Image (cartoon, rainbow, N blue to C red):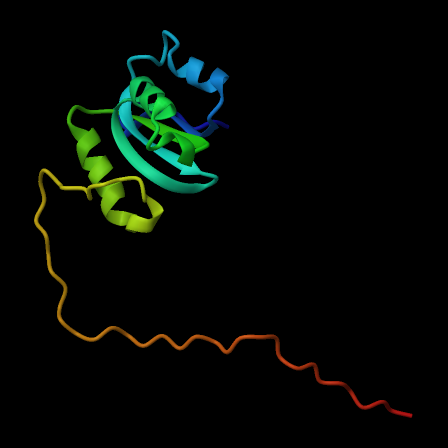
Length: 145
Protein backbone atom coordinates (compact mmCIF):
# COMPACT_ATOMS: atom_id res chain seq x y z
CA UNK A 1 0.00 0.00 0.00
CA UNK A 2 1.44 3.38 -1.00
CA UNK A 3 1.90 6.06 1.61
CA UNK A 4 -0.31 9.12 1.34
CA UNK A 5 1.80 12.08 0.25
CA UNK A 6 0.92 15.63 1.22
CA UNK A 7 2.17 19.10 0.43
CA UNK A 8 3.32 19.47 4.04
CA UNK A 9 6.69 17.77 3.47
CA UNK A 10 9.96 19.57 2.76
CA UNK A 11 10.50 18.04 -0.70
CA UNK A 12 7.81 18.34 -3.35
CA UNK A 13 9.47 16.46 -6.25
CA UNK A 14 12.95 15.07 -6.79
CA UNK A 15 15.19 13.24 -9.23
CA UNK A 16 17.94 11.00 -7.91
CA UNK A 17 21.19 10.28 -9.79
CA UNK A 18 19.98 11.12 -13.29
CA UNK A 19 22.64 10.46 -15.92
CA UNK A 20 24.00 13.44 -17.80
CA UNK A 21 22.53 12.60 -21.19
CA UNK A 22 20.64 14.78 -23.66
CA UNK A 23 17.29 13.08 -22.94
CA UNK A 24 17.47 13.91 -19.19
CA UNK A 25 18.64 17.48 -19.81
CA UNK A 26 15.74 17.89 -22.24
CA UNK A 27 13.28 16.48 -19.68
CA UNK A 28 14.36 19.18 -17.19
CA UNK A 29 13.37 21.80 -19.79
CA UNK A 30 9.90 20.27 -20.25
CA UNK A 31 6.81 22.32 -19.43
CA UNK A 32 6.33 20.41 -16.18
CA UNK A 33 9.88 20.93 -14.82
CA UNK A 34 11.36 24.05 -16.46
CA UNK A 35 10.41 26.45 -13.64
CA UNK A 36 11.27 24.14 -10.74
CA UNK A 37 13.54 25.76 -8.14
CA UNK A 38 15.40 23.92 -5.43
CA UNK A 39 18.70 22.32 -4.50
CA UNK A 40 20.81 20.08 -6.74
CA UNK A 41 24.05 18.12 -6.66
CA UNK A 42 26.48 17.20 -9.43
CA UNK A 43 28.22 13.83 -9.12
CA UNK A 44 31.30 12.15 -10.52
CA UNK A 45 30.00 8.59 -10.41
CA UNK A 46 28.30 8.53 -7.03
CA UNK A 47 30.64 11.05 -5.37
CA UNK A 48 29.20 14.57 -5.04
CA UNK A 49 31.46 17.27 -6.49
CA UNK A 50 29.16 20.32 -6.42
CA UNK A 51 26.10 21.47 -4.47
CA UNK A 52 23.95 24.33 -5.76
CA UNK A 53 20.53 25.96 -5.70
CA UNK A 54 18.29 27.92 -8.04
CA UNK A 55 16.16 27.15 -11.08
CA UNK A 56 17.17 23.52 -11.66
CA UNK A 57 16.87 23.35 -15.47
CA UNK A 58 18.80 26.60 -15.97
CA UNK A 59 21.58 25.75 -13.51
CA UNK A 60 22.12 22.17 -14.76
CA UNK A 61 22.17 23.47 -18.34
CA UNK A 62 24.80 26.09 -17.44
CA UNK A 63 26.97 23.48 -15.71
CA UNK A 64 26.60 21.18 -18.74
CA UNK A 65 28.15 23.86 -20.97
CA UNK A 66 30.69 25.04 -18.37
CA UNK A 67 34.39 24.56 -19.10
CA UNK A 68 35.14 24.64 -15.34
CA UNK A 69 32.58 22.15 -14.02
CA UNK A 70 31.52 20.39 -17.22
CA UNK A 71 34.36 17.85 -17.45
CA UNK A 72 33.96 16.67 -13.85
CA UNK A 73 30.41 15.35 -13.53
CA UNK A 74 28.30 12.64 -15.13
CA UNK A 75 25.20 12.41 -12.88
CA UNK A 76 22.99 14.88 -11.04
CA UNK A 77 20.26 14.84 -8.40
CA UNK A 78 17.72 17.55 -7.68
CA UNK A 79 14.99 18.37 -5.14
CA UNK A 80 12.14 20.83 -5.50
CA UNK A 81 11.69 22.39 -2.06
CA UNK A 82 8.33 23.41 -0.57
CA UNK A 83 8.40 26.78 1.13
CA UNK A 84 9.89 30.08 0.12
CA UNK A 85 13.42 30.92 1.21
CA UNK A 86 14.45 27.41 2.25
CA UNK A 87 16.70 26.68 -0.75
CA UNK A 88 19.63 28.69 0.64
CA UNK A 89 19.32 27.09 4.09
CA UNK A 90 19.24 23.57 2.65
CA UNK A 91 22.16 24.28 0.31
CA UNK A 92 24.12 25.65 3.29
CA UNK A 93 23.25 22.55 5.31
CA UNK A 94 24.68 20.24 2.64
CA UNK A 95 27.77 22.42 2.20
CA UNK A 96 28.42 22.32 5.95
CA UNK A 97 27.79 18.60 6.36
CA UNK A 98 29.88 17.39 3.42
CA UNK A 99 33.66 17.71 3.72
CA UNK A 100 35.31 19.98 1.15
CA UNK A 101 36.84 17.07 -0.78
CA UNK A 102 33.36 15.66 -1.46
CA UNK A 103 32.25 18.91 -3.05
CA UNK A 104 35.53 19.96 -4.60
CA UNK A 105 34.02 22.24 -7.25
CA UNK A 106 32.30 24.51 -4.68
CA UNK A 107 34.38 27.57 -3.86
CA UNK A 108 32.44 28.69 -0.78
CA UNK A 109 31.08 26.98 2.29
CA UNK A 110 27.49 27.43 3.36
CA UNK A 111 26.35 30.34 5.51
CA UNK A 112 23.13 29.95 7.44
CA UNK A 113 20.74 32.90 7.37
CA UNK A 114 19.50 31.97 10.83
CA UNK A 115 20.48 29.80 13.74
CA UNK A 116 22.95 30.06 16.60
CA UNK A 117 26.34 28.37 16.44
CA UNK A 118 27.22 26.35 19.53
CA UNK A 119 30.93 25.66 20.05
CA UNK A 120 32.04 22.27 21.40
CA UNK A 121 33.68 21.78 24.78
CA UNK A 122 37.48 21.79 24.52
CA UNK A 123 38.64 18.27 25.24
CA UNK A 124 41.04 16.04 23.35
CA UNK A 125 39.33 13.69 20.90
CA UNK A 126 38.68 10.06 21.76
CA UNK A 127 41.51 7.79 20.68
CA UNK A 128 40.43 5.35 17.99
CA UNK A 129 42.13 1.98 18.04
CA UNK A 130 42.08 0.60 14.54
CA UNK A 131 42.20 -3.18 14.16
CA UNK A 132 45.46 -4.62 12.92
CA UNK A 133 45.37 -5.28 9.20
CA UNK A 134 45.33 -8.60 7.45
CA UNK A 135 43.41 -11.78 7.99
CA UNK A 136 44.02 -13.92 11.03
CA UNK A 137 45.99 -17.10 10.65
CA UNK A 138 43.95 -20.18 10.15
CA UNK A 139 44.22 -22.75 12.88
CA UNK A 140 44.52 -26.24 11.58
CA UNK A 141 42.84 -28.96 13.53
CA UNK A 142 44.96 -31.86 14.50
CA UNK A 143 43.85 -34.90 12.64
CA UNK A 144 42.47 -37.68 14.77
CA UNK A 145 43.80 -40.97 13.41
